[in-house]
Image 1 (cartoon, rainbow, N blue to C red):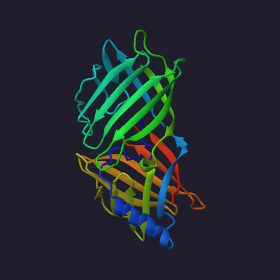
Image 2: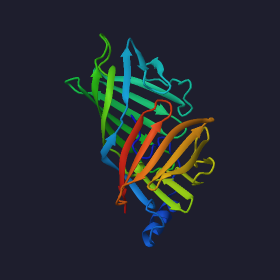
Image 3: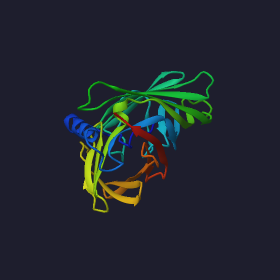
Image 4: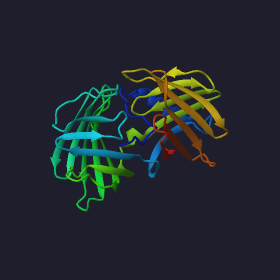
Length: 273
């Protein structure tokens, strides 16, 4: 299941006073830049959702579309995932003939996802509950996908290929960012706690957040209404994100490209209050 708001899927500690200060100051004075303000992703504008490929059979869970791919017993017990530094362990248990429950425990979140296949076998609903250090209460997300390839003979109903259709519900906190552009100084704050300040066309700077492996960001201007952000970790580019303002300055398209897969997820954000 992808992430809708600014691509932040491993956020931890929140900086509520800093966020409140940025938002209120932007409202209290004329914006120095049309990028300035609080932006909330619109659930009605989503494109580039991923394709997931699962197989649950003979007591074994396999995810071929995961990065990296993973295979382990579907016994509800914790299993290490080699090559994924954002996961301490995962587990999968079969919750019925049409449902599985996946639990992910990592340094930046604890997530439980129930995937349920519809009676007609054509669609699936994912309900995710996240708990993040420094964030009050659980965050609940609902996502739907459609089947594009059948389950192999004898496999559990969740097996097969699933194309993402849309997010049905995402907490506003998880899809909110605050931007500020003053000259060549670009400030980014995610409502769940990620933050960095960088110079346009400058070098990489650390992204604040309790990452197990440090993450860095660099920004550059690629047009009058577009800023491009590049993230890297472990010396490799992980994502490239563009922020493009609409002609009237009321909407901001955020396009996030996963460097490993080349897939680009797009969503439009509106100015928040």
